[in-house]
Image (cartoon, rainbow, N blue to C red; front, side, top):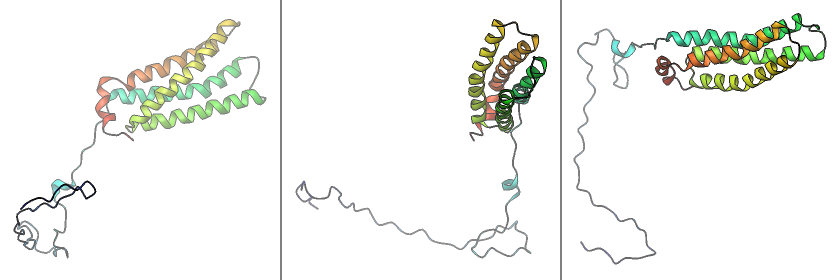
Length: 191
């Protein structure tokens, strides 16, 4: 067969002549011999139930560093509202007034976000682990600023302890979140 001359305005597709293939012979589905005789066949020819091997599942065991990181993230999240209350009660003022109440509200919101992230981390969420560490980095700047303010004035020991806890707990939790034994636990769940 000869090819027609090249046409620049024509279609670049050419038909391909494949050799004819024989159709695959269709056979009706036969139930396996181990199928119980009392079970009726499926109307579309499929077996009626799953095999035992199809019904088994396995769970990924949670490594111990993930449980320790969860506990540390919980403590780090609770250090914000409880530290605010401790500072207000130890200081000259109380929680009366707009400023301390709004500070307590904001730190409670931070704690709720931290608790939600810690629970998601315990369930194996890879993104919660990254979000907790990123949020701790941003909040660490605030805790460091509070430590600098406490260093300039004649501060009592309570603000120092609160600032130290707010800096140390997230750092320790981040270390436990990224220990080498935790990688396989978070790799299976990217949600």
